[in-house]
Image (cartoon, rainbow, N blue to C red; front, side, top):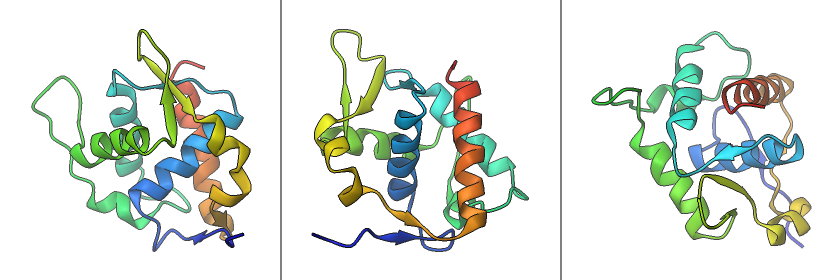
Length: 139
């Protein structure tokens, strides 16, 4: 059995952060949009603007948002959500594909896939993130 990876605000990647946030949203029973990614992009754009938020991961500064449409869109975030779907971390319900959930096989092995957050400030940012997503995603 592998030791869970430790993630820090300095070293966490977008994919690691989104995966851990997805696990936490799942535990909080927050519905997660899939087909229409607008709320995800607005969430992460809000993270980008929250420069002084305690525990904010460093990678957020590197996210690029395009304003060619009605809301800010980050290509890296779109690709990350799609990759989590393609690798089986998340599952999307038919026929509407409007919401996703963490795959049951992943949840069955949550202690193996869950990262360890040892920094209290980073933990605060995850709480902030779950609260922001709950409000934005309609929960």
